Length: 242
Image 1: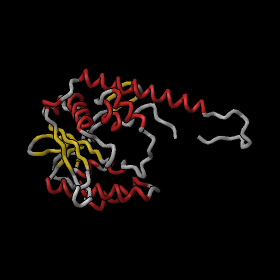
Image 2 (image 1 turned 180 degrees about the vertical axis):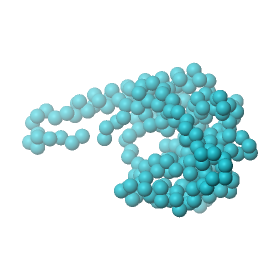
Image 3 (image 1 turned 30 degrees about the horizontal axis):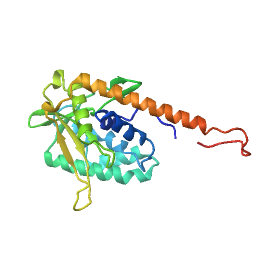
Image 4 (image 1 turned 60 degrees about the vertical axis):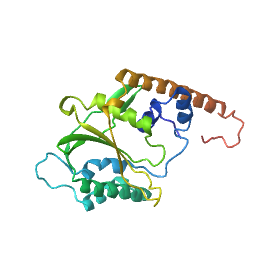
């Protein structure tokens, strides 16, 4: 499988604030495991799961059957994606109904970080909670999700890039779906941001640069290993599968 030159944004976040030796250990494992399904359909309906509408006027919000149908459509021919996406979406839909969440559709930009990469640790909506705008990011990975340092990276990126202007003073939250240690069932967990924990922007940028330096070294190592494995022209099959 071809290794991408830019890192998936969640992998960048969970690695960037690690020490360089730990960066290398974690990055060597990137793309060595192919997940059995994609959770992109869940992310695509994040706004609907927060009852996002063009305005806060009393417009109809998406009902669960509509969201369920949309997820199944986004899964396309990948039938095995449906259950994990639908089950997590249902959890968050019910959780947000209990919170009585209302949200507004709003197009937030991607942020280029160099190396041909860009990040967007936020979705195209903001919710209103206790009269305050809240910017949310879904992290649905069960394994290799955002730990403490990864969340610090994401919150700091949100703080410096979108919690500005009209959204200065907005609350920030990361939503994860860990397994309950007693039941084994997945549940909703919300992490909130304390501005005292923000990573200064110059240190955030340095962490990105350091991460991509290690990543480029790993890519070079993989390319060198691939060249060493290339055929010598003596194989009778005449073709090779890497």
